Length: 249
Image (tube, rainbow, N blue to C red):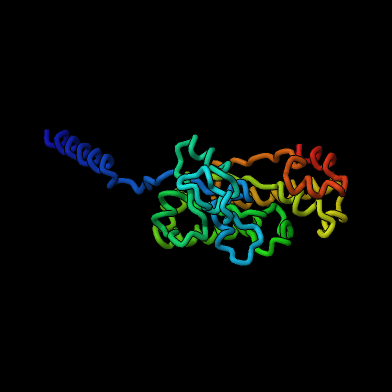
């Protein structure tokens, strides 16, 4: 009769350990998002780039957001990433260059790497002097991964990054601040079709790289009609807008 009693006691102890998390090593991580993009998603990175010609620090930015003051967003209210994240019930990640960023902030909110003027191609928007291309943003993300592994351990960090959401919203600048402007070599090296294929193949490599770094829940926003962009209308005298609108569909 002793054996059944011991078995019952053992079962109760094991159940107790499982319930209180002592028999496993699961990471009960907050689900956050990591944002990669351009001015449609930038929440302040460019404002910390002191030499950048693309900064959202003038009075009309942010007039409908919180206290109505400029906050680094290139819009009057919420960004695309803000809206999507709010709908999903996710916290709004701070800018990568925000001085308050530490392991606790990252663990609870994620990080926003988006940069006004950023493009899929490294050469895009070079006239702005300082901005983060998508490759640069991925490089910064790798640094965040190494930092978090050092702070909370490899296993816990890997699970944290796997469970997170990833948003990539980028590509318009590769047309309006690169292909549309003859000062860039890409404008006379490629035609519309070959440039689009160049963008697609580069983006494909970048998304594969992000997947290899643990990004599983990833959303990419397609491009809008770039002919409606204010800068695109200014450079319309080059006569390329109809073709560009066709390429971005």
